[in-house]
Amino acid sequence: MTQSDPKSVRIFAPAKINLTLHVVGQRSDGYHLLDSLVAFADIGDIVDLTVGHREFTVSGPEAQHLTSKDDNLVVQVAKLFPDLPDLSIALTKNLPVASGVGGGSADAAATFRGLVAMQAGQAVPKVDQLLELGADIPMCVSCAAARVGGIGQEITTLPKMPSLHAVLVNPRAAVSTPKVFQSLPVRKNPPMPVDLPSFAGASEFADWLLAQRNDLQATAIALEPSIETVIQALESQPGCLMARMSGSGATCFGVFKNADASLAAAKEIGLMHPEWWVQATHLGTQSGSAQPQIS
Image (cartoon, rainbow, N blue to C red; front, side, top):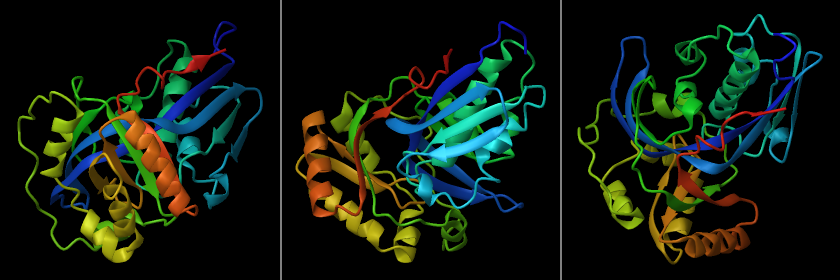
């Protein structure tokens, strides 16, 4: 790092939502093969990197739910940059932990983007190295809506995917991703169509999504029945076009016909279930807002 390199970087880590999640096979090493459409929300965590002294701190409304700091993915990503000086890493945790919205992976990817910016053109680790830390991390680096295959390394950006008005709901239940996968009764299911259609708008897109699946949903509901309660709460709201679980749960999303409908639904669900985490959002590509802010 030279005198001209940035001394402080702030990075937005948007939530990752699996609009579809088809489990299409399993490798000999145990990794499951997926075919998934992912989109990113305009809500998420914040990572602040500052040159000075070595420290990792966590704050924010969801910070108390992190059980360990030592093995946090943001610390593991920082270890991939051995030539950097001592850094303080401050994570503001706004997303629920172990909730199926890629919070830890999004934080790791945001840290990667920030550290690349701090390297100021010097050699940086390859994105492929992130796959060794977590299969969801590479897809969170660009924060672009994409079709994701393999174990998460096959990423095809979808520049024409409609932006969606949505509501995210988590019933305050942490679901173990390994346990969900271990409990799957079928490991080889049909993929999405090879060629995805073009969508005129959100309603047409939602209709198409209804014909697709999250192959983890039924298993996750068997482990955590409150997920089904959340989906029913979303589906019962006026203007809801479809609802589904994201990732391995327990967060679910509902797609709504417009912003007013999503805001009204979030307010109503929050009043009915004040113990739940409820957020209205937009789902799509967040590449611009996820760029590091250098100072």
